[in-house]
Image 1: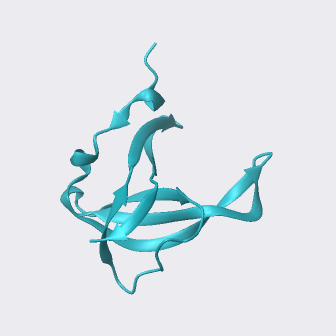
Image 2: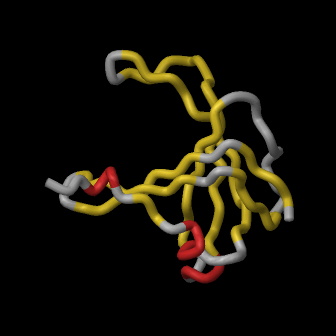
Length: 102
């Protein structure tokens, strides 16, 4: 049976322009409880070609970019976007190796 998690989104379908609007820590979870240990950061971008829909991209490790004052155009190295189903709705998850200003 085909699993939704096994499907990968073509990055070209996200559009050319991604605007970084928020940077938030990503925490480690143990036994379904959040710990105080930061394992990476989530970079929240608005997808211009998709009516400014937001996508949160996780990058493990040290913080790569600071919280922008407004927004800054960015792109990602090795971006992987996939879908999953939760409570009857399709959700998206994304991870990357790095982020950089365009």
